[in-house]
Length: 368
Image (cartoon, rainbow, N blue to C red; front, side, top):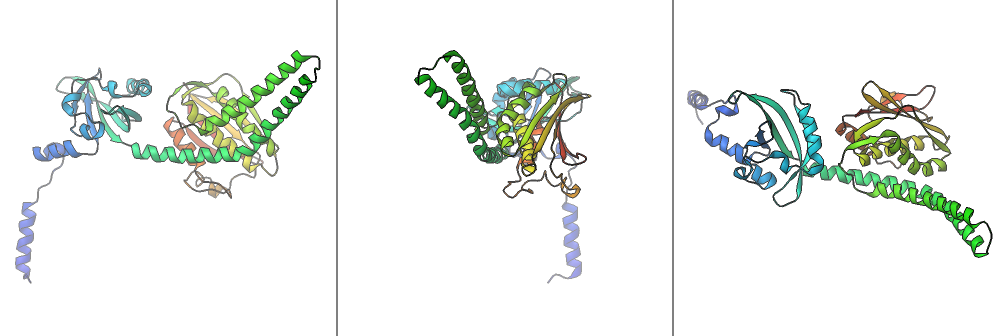
């Protein structure tokens, strides 16, 4: 056992040998090289034209390119075509010092694309007396894969729940088509009129099946200018089959045309999730789900108003949490996925009371 004086002496020696570093620049070059090579994130500096002036050696591990290959090349050449326009738009509106976060796909040397989260900012360079773009890229492939699996699970759940209603909706026009074919085989007159009706019935089946197939497709990431009314009509066309089974009517009200910059498949999924919930809470009483589309300042608002029993105040904050559900066969993923999609579109979801009964699910998206 060391006596107290010897122990104190050792502690003083240890304290005297301790060195503190207050910033990355203070670290010895060997430490800086280690961080440069083995850090999980890729750090880059680009000039105002997007030419790469500096990049960490971790680029080799993240996207397969060594730093000497990347230096002097155009940064956007490594970004997927569908993300270039969005990234340029973000940077053009970026103020000096403001942090901008986005998710893009970056080309790997192997030819595949890697999902990365980019945190970037415009910073003044005192050496060149100009502004540069500094960005930190982090691999989020695993997170995107997990999100895609959750979304696919929820989409398949929706498709399964809609199957009975869609089968019923398709059976009606098929019965009509069978009857008309029997009449035509019997040589009845007025064939042109029957052909017209048969064409309409086939169109109805085609519309229903195309919307059902849309649910089963993977999510895209291709934002464009879209008409809110067009998106909502497509979703209501699909959901009408489920609504009819529960004696629920779907009504859309919109004044002036409204367009938003969004990914069509993702925002459709948002509308499907909310309208499906509205129909389900009215399954016993029936009624009308009213969809009000309107502008408020620089925001497009979509109020989905149901006539159900409403949501208790103490549950409003909880229902957006993953796996929390008040439904017997619910997954608890629908509203969580809805929230994630809206956050990526710089939008939001708010839940309000609808007096005297029911709830209002307000979807807000920035106007184009």
